[in-house]
Length: 418
Image (cartoon, rainbow, N blue to C red):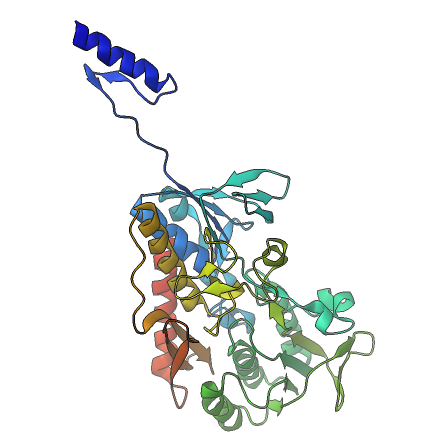
């Protein structure tokens, strides 16, 4: 009797909010709530983190994403140029929901580093750890007059923006003229993308007999980064010499939408249609939270914010020399998920000694609808040193790489959303 009374008193001390109970004559040991991880952004980096954390089961995961579905930017050039349907690159978040991830359809407007994020409408979502994968925003003020011409000159480098560029391409292929594609100085999202857009639109010109040309106005002396320059230029000359005019070392300073000209130091460039790929930076959210200026400042190899050890930044918003590509973003998301799991388990950080492998980058530059250039980037970092990148690039486009690109895409989408 005395033993029972003592046990009962112990239960009362635990409280009445479900932290202790008697079941079949046995006391249930109270379990602490799981640490809360909020992931901002349902793209490649955010899904890499959220799915990995959900599989581990050590934390409660909330994914905040304004779109109600996923659309891949990688490989969507085939849709932009009119070869495939948009649905080929879109996926439902249904399996994300089934994985036990709490998904909130909203746009984050503020980060309170005391431990919560605020979404449009004012709702707060508390976190113990925060993973940011918010993508990029365009530096519109870099080109005078662009803001007034935004609706007529879509960039299309963010999910679901591709439709607006597709409409431009369709109209150009119907009537002809001069289709101008601009390339900014790096860093920007997916370096080969402006060139592959030019290639696939040029392929459609050949197929349809469209009169006119594509003018690629590049702020750089060659396609960037340098290891991809030779095969890109070779494709321009060998496959599309009649359709593409390549202008280098020419930065666009202004657009006059009324006269339909781009202003450059060497003179005006006239256009019938234009796909202006603007300079890019991390979204304003990064600056609002004091996490960086143009790009988020992170520590490698952990991708932790230099300003706040509870915050990780992955994907294109992070400011390291790593390629701004979907594959790198996904790998970094998985990596930070494992680091959060390590910290939740109370395990020490690995001792820093020698080179540490960073997330690899696999990218495919489409030259035709069926052929591509494979770009494989390996990266590592040693304590106190800058990351080292090693490129393996196809010397020439091939059918094998075109097939490899499609297989890679299906595999990645399945890992994120299957």
